[in-house]
Structure formats: C-alpha cells, structure tokens
Image (cartoon, rainbow, N blue to C red):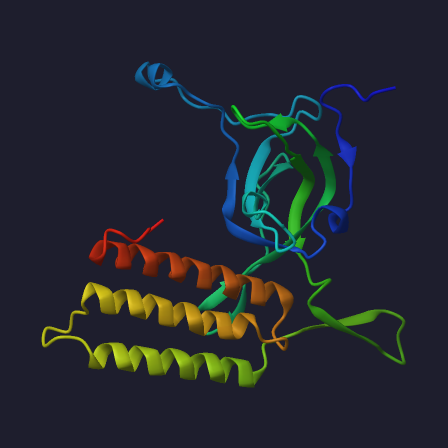
Length: 244
C-alpha cells in the first residue's frame, strides 16, 4: 500500500547529514507569504504554525558537506518549537574565521515533488526542539580509566596548516599592494588577481588533511566565493569572459 501524500518519515541525523551540518546565518521565524496587495492594505505577516503539532515554525539554513549537487549543498531545516531555538556558539577555525556545526533532534523527512517546469524529487526536513553542537565527525574520543564516560576533545587545525595559509595570504597581499598606484587603489585586473590569490590560499587549507572535515569544507566554500569574485572582476575588464 502506498504512503499517503504528506507522510513524514522519521530519520536520524546521521542519515540526513552523514558528514554533519554547518549553520549559516541565524534562526528566523517562518513567516507566511504576503502579496504586494496585502502589504498595501497594511496586513501583518504571521508566523507559520505546524498543522500537526500546533508548534511555531522556525527556519535555519545549513550547509551539507556530503551534497553531491550544488543545489543540495544549501538546506533549509524547519524547526518546530514554541519558542525560538538558540543556536550554539560559533567555533573559531582560524583568526577571523568562524563556523557553527550543529545537529538536529527529532528529524522527519517529507518527500514532495519540487521545481517549476522541470520537476525533481525534493525533501522537506523538519526537526523538533533546538539545534545543538555537532562534534561526531570532529572529535577524538578517549576513555578515562576511572570513568566509563567519554571525554570529547575538539580537533583543531594544525599549526603548520595555519602557518601556510597565513604565509600564502601575506605574500599575495604584499605583492598586490606593491603593484598598486600612488593613490593606493588597485587596478581592476589586479583586484581580480587578488581574489584569485586569496582563493588559492583558502584552497591550500581546504586540502590539508590535518584540518577537520567541516573546516575544510568551509575553506572550500570560501575559495569558490573568491574565485567567483575574480571572474566577475575579469569580466569587467574583458567583456568576452563569463563573470557568472
């Protein structure tokens, strides 16, 4: 017998996010859609309420390192809770760079058909309660001889990895400013080279096996962003290039 439409299947966090999840932004209320006409009438948007549990809906966007397709890398999780969940503190991977690994409890997955003209199988992910920190893939576990409980230790990036990144970034930055004009401004082409250099520095750290998997993924995302900026800047100089 087929499952009825709208069935929610229970799933563990490891099944949905086998390599963990990195939180992006903050937890926000899931508000109802309002048309321009409704806004013109001065109507106030209301927060959505789950029809089955009666709890308020909150949204949080996470990055899935295990995603094989680009469209699946960013996932929106709907949290069902009476009050706004409080996310864990962000973890500093290196100076100035922080990530926020999270996990969800009470996960359910609903497989609706998504897309406009070109349909595809999507998933609506819901969780109960608040999100908490996730160290399952990032910890070294030691057993104390005097206690049966485990002591968790966070794996930090190696000093060599951070030193290599800092050296690469410093060298590229120094070269860029040495090539700048008397007013201190960099030509557009040089700026594109700067973006590419920063992307390369991020990629060095992302390839270091001594860095935790979630931190390597965050570095790879940063590298892609600076590569994109470099393409845009080069396209301004040479319109024949694709800056998308």
